[in-house]
Image: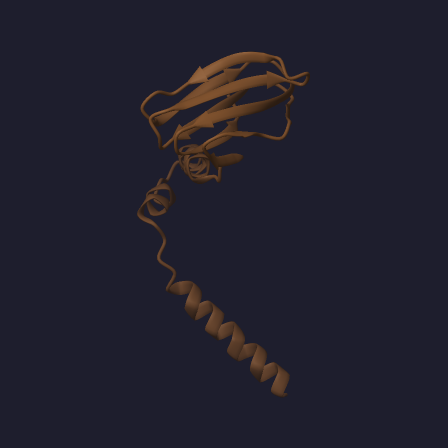
Length: 133
């Protein structure tokens, strides 16, 4: 009997806490869309925008290898004035030299499937995502 009472009290406290969670306005906006396809697209954009980066660091680093099975988009952000990134193939050869002067965000499309790594040199912190094209 004590176990049932505890379980009931726990469920009531969890449901009460869940009803007080503050849902961000952008989620509410997506939720309010009546068209299913528009609502799903809205949630997909939020998931894309708020996903954690695949790689992050400060100053210089070389990432571990990653594999793509088709076209992918490298999305990158830099907080410093200098950001230089080298896209390397599985053998370490530089395929593309990518720069982002002055900080900000940009992207680069990897067109082919393969095994790659990134060598990053920056003056401050940076973040890199690997997204669908």
